[in-house]
Every structure is written in structure tokens, then in C-alpha cells.
Amino acid sequence: DEDFGEGNGAPLVVPGTYKVSMATRVGGAITPIGAPLSFTVTPLQGLPVGTEDRAALARFQRNLASLYRSVNGAVASAHELKVRVQSIKRALIETPMAAATLTPRAREVEAANNSVLRLLVGDQALQARNEPAPPSI
Image (cartoon, rainbow, N blue to C red; front, top):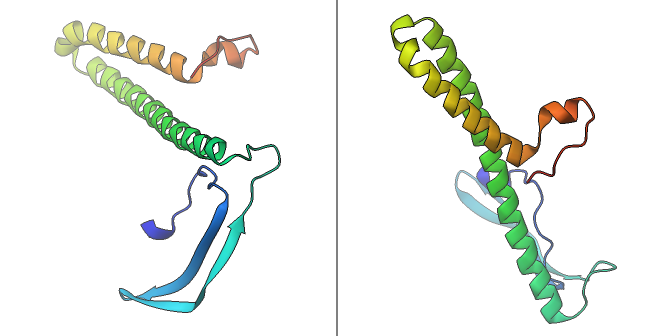
């Protein structure tokens, strides 16, 4: 159910007073459970105390979470493309007439995608040999 899925973590809320309530949903009907409860969120040790600083921190955390989701999406798409290009190259081996013209293009796409993956996740070949690798996104 999309309402109760697990997340990868989200930015912390801005300290303040919040109210929570619980309910059950059965067959589309929502039934409250108990009375709403108020609670106070206080800043964690080391986090900014000023209201403006906390609001700026919350904005930064939201922006960072959005960037994180975007990068993860790009990495997933690049990995998916890598698998597809490998499948295309295998199919071209079985199709000699098309292979002469399309195999070089498949290799170009593969090389470009490998460059993108290297920027996103780093040089896997260097990392596998415990060699220092340039920073990645």
C-alpha cells in the first residue's frame, strides 16, 4: 500500500509542536483510533537552534533528498541501459547483415553509457583493485 511504504529516510522535521492521530482503513472506510496526541520535537545536539537556521537546514535537507533521488534514478537508468546494450550486442552477433552497421553504434552507446556510469558511481575497475579513484557523484 503506497500510504505505508518504507522510505529511504527523509529530512528531519523542523523542531516545534506537532499533532499525530491514528486510524484504520478497512474497505475504504477510515475509523479513528483514540484521540489525537500532541508532542514536541526538539533540535538534536549540534543542530542550529535559531528558527531561521532550522528552516534553512530543513530546506537544504529537502533539496539534498531530491538530489539523492535524482542521482539514484540516473544510476538505475544507466545500469538498465547497460543491460539493454549487452542484449543488443548479443542479438547483433546473431544477425550478421545488421551487425556490420549497427555493432559500431552499439559500442558507441556502450562507451558513452560507461562514461556516465563512471561519473555517477566511480571507476569500478580501479576500485576493484583498491586503487585510488577520482571522486564520483
